[in-house]
Length: 282
Image 1 (cartoon, helix red, strand yellow):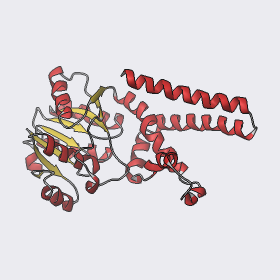
Image 2 (cartoon, one colour):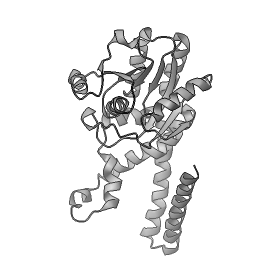
Image 3 (cartoon, rainbow, N blue to C red):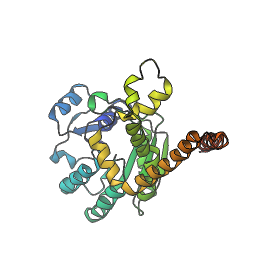
Image 4 (spheres, rainbow, N blue to C red):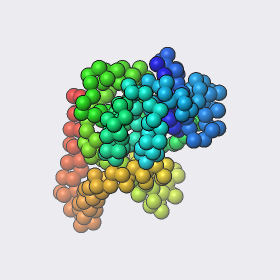
């Protein structure tokens, strides 16, 4: 099988490396930076460059670009797609991408499935890609309503071959609602938290809590600006919810309300335990 990977950054580069190492698929790769293509070939992350002409031989096409670039790439290159091609993106938002590309897939005869690999690190670029990034990771899929069971089984087997151990199927709106909390809010909170002037004095006074809270503040601001704005309503709702909860803690501490502070902390601990229990059940 021929697999095309568009965008050889952190996620795309890791996908290409994993496919080359863990499967027998032929991997064709494209990146806007030609030096990345040369490096990917040299390190045997891809078999050859994915040119417009070679798109037509691909059985699966993975697009690891920002949301707007993903839509643009598919619209500009869909004339090369064969009819049974499976196209999957890797974007962190789904409503925008699926709204733009699912009708186009119906029109042109290819299959578009929204995909979000739940893996990554706080750094970006091919140099930080890693073939083991997806071991035991989760994959969230947003398929079209009329997708066949056979296609879903094929996609499940495809992702499982490179390490994904848990596949969830959902709608684009549900994906974006939940991801606003599980991913986007964490990045907003880390970015805001690190802006305290005290952060510059942390050396010798910080441990795991500080590292955990600040790790994702080392984000790619171009990508996350786009992701936040494409998902603004769910994300703003989560930010406002967090502000409301933080205000309760601030008020209790400011007024010395020991009973209320105890209740808030107990409530948070119990919510964490309940969330962890649900993880174990699933």
